[in-house]
Length: 195
Image (tube, rainbow, N blue to C red):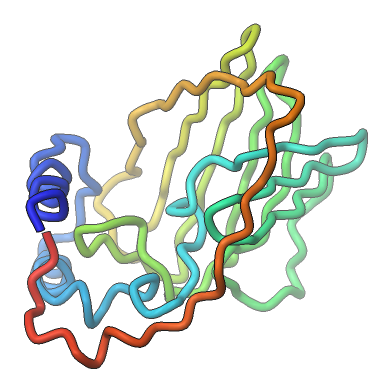
C-alpha cells in the first residue's frame, strides 16, 4: 500500500507535467481520483505511445526499425524515410515513421485514437496527439527524448525529462514473456484510491 501511495505522491509532485487547457483540468483530476475505473491499462488495455516508454530491444536494417517491448509482449514496426500512411485507421500506437538526423534516430508518430493515457495520474490525450521520440546512442548508453504535442487538450507541447539508459551487453540476456492480462480483481475493488 505504501509503495503505491509513495509512487503516487512522487508522480503528482513531479514539476514536469503536461499543461492542459484550463477547462480540462477537472477531467485530469477525475481520472486521478478514479484511476482504477478510468485508466485503460488498469483493465488490460494497452499503454500506447508514448506511455509504453523505451523498448527493451531495437532491431534495424536500412529500411525499417523494430522496437520490441518486454513489458507488453508487443512491438512497433517503424519504416525509415517513408511518409506517414494517411489511409491507416487511428490506433493505440499511432502511425510511426523514422529518419536519421546525424547520430539520432527521430521517430514521428501521429494518427492516434484517444483510448490510452500519456501517463498516470490521469494524463489523457486526444486523437490530435503527435509524438516525436529521439534516440541517440553514445558508446554504451542511449538517450531517449520525447515531445508530445496535442492541440486538442494541451496548452503547449510536453517535453519529457530525457532518460539515459545503459545498453545490456550480456550475450545471454533474454526477454521474459508476460502472462496474458486476465483481470479478475477489478470488480472486487472497494476503493477508487490509486496512489
